[in-house]
Amino acid sequence: MKHLREELWFNTPNRRDYLNITDKVEALVRKSGVQHGLVLINAMHITASVYINDNESGLIQDYDEWLEQLAPHEPTHKYRHNRTGEDNADAHLKRQIMGREVVVAITDGKLDFGPWEQIFYAEFDGRRKKRVLVKVIGE
Amino acid sequence: MKHLREELWFNTPNRRDYLNITDKVEALVRKSGVQHGLVLINAMHITASVYINDNESGLIQDYDEWLEQLAPHEPTHKYRHNRTGEDNADAHLKRQIMGREVVVAITDGKLDFGPWEQIFYAEFDGRRKKRVLVKVIGE
Amino acid sequence: MKHLREELWFNTPNRRDYLNITDKVEALVRKSGVQHGLVLINAMHITASVYINDNESGLIQDYDEWLEQLAPHEPTHKYRHNRTGEDNADAHLKRQIMGREVVVAITDGKLDFGPWEQIFYAEFDGRRKKRVLVKVIGE
Image 1 (cartoon, rainbow over the protein chains, first blue to last red):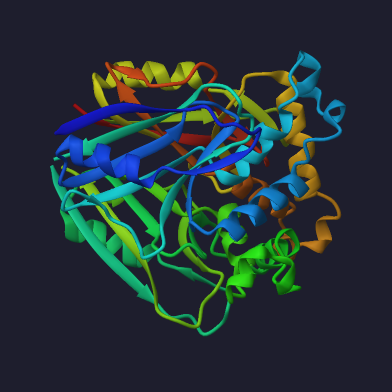
Image 2 (cartoon, rainbow over the protein chains, first blue to last red):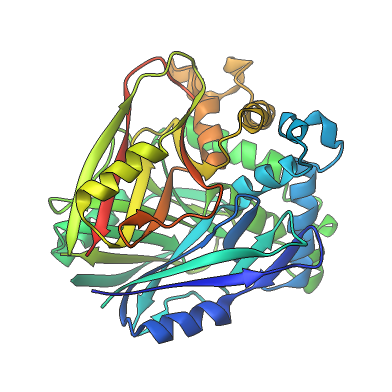
């Protein structure tokens, strides 16, 4: 069994940002030499998500507004978590909607994707260094 | 390490449909010959989900109404994504609630399931050919 | 390839409870002897979740209130599923928000975690014996 473990680092300019990381993951799958296996891609922080969906800017705005409706940032004092001195309780909630991780099949050395699947890093409490784990296993 | 990769194809009659695909996945696990490992089952399209829950028709109606409340189809013009000419922005949102994929343990050649676990394909923008990926790895 | 399969059993005192199971999973990873691989941790019941987030009591209360807003327990008669004699339709909905499973990388024999990642069992229909599956594969 082959395996590879790498981190991707991000420091987004805004509190919330959505970055397409498909090319970075593809490069790591190639580097691993794995032809058939699985790759796990997960946020290592608990106020961010990794998800798979469309690389379409209108949709990304739709997601952002929808998440803000389902789990609003303001008023920050309504969340018990924010009594610890944080203001990011909403980010912990948004991340549960969008998910922590994705697992993608590797076939013939490539991400085994449908026509529009793209991997995104979704940041809900940015403006600082945070990272994503990529773990490849297979043969 | 053994591995198997197959696609399941669907063309649902309605915009939204919920199909129990447990038997199809079980047959592929058998075909793989894997006794101990993991199987990944994921929608290859970004307006559909694979999830695990109860095969009970009332619950499926509850899910459908609940998703329509959380991410309504109408009015379609309220979503920026639909300015591209699509009318399926809500389907991209619903799919994030229900998830893209499940990973199931294989033990002694079988899906290692609790008493009521069943695998569903949830279609949120149907009436055309779409597919699910099944990837088995193990030994 | 090495593999290990174990169950964790719970019987929570309340309908809804949130238990940190990180130590139990870590012990099983150690027991497996796997140095590099993946561990799948999933609820075997369809009214419970396994998720990864912060071990902070205020946040857990925030999650609990938020889930109750998104998928209220009462009035129980509004859910079709409850016509089967159950009163747990809301638990099936809450579980889809929080997820069925997590997959965690194993590196150098340990859970490969960011600084605050902790694994939780979230029970939405407790007061009876229920279980979680832990499946480790790797080498």
